Image 1: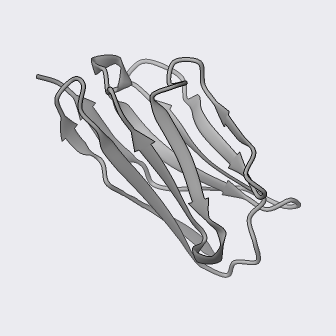
Image 2: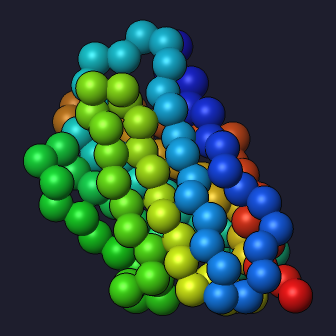
Length: 116
C-alpha cells in the first residue's frame, strides 16, 4: 500500500510564493514519474508539472516560468515551488507518482488559495 501525503498549501496574496511537498510512504519500489495536478471548482483536473526520473520536466502552459518542480528520488519526495501566484492558481493541488510499470498513486490534495 502506497500513501502520498502533501503539505505546504495555504492562503497567499497575489504575487506571493508557496512551496508544496509530497512524500510517499508504504511499499515502494521506485517511481518513474512524479508530478502535480490541480483542480479548481467547476473545472476538470489539469496538469501543473511532471518530472521524470533523470530530470526531464514538463509544465502546463499557465504555470511556465512561475512554477518549478523538483524531486528527491532517494526520499520519494516531489516538490513544487510556486512564485508570482495569481488568483487563477487557486485550486486543490494533487500529487501523483507512478512506477514505470503498474498503477499510479494520487495524494489526497492540498488547498492553495490566492487572494488579497
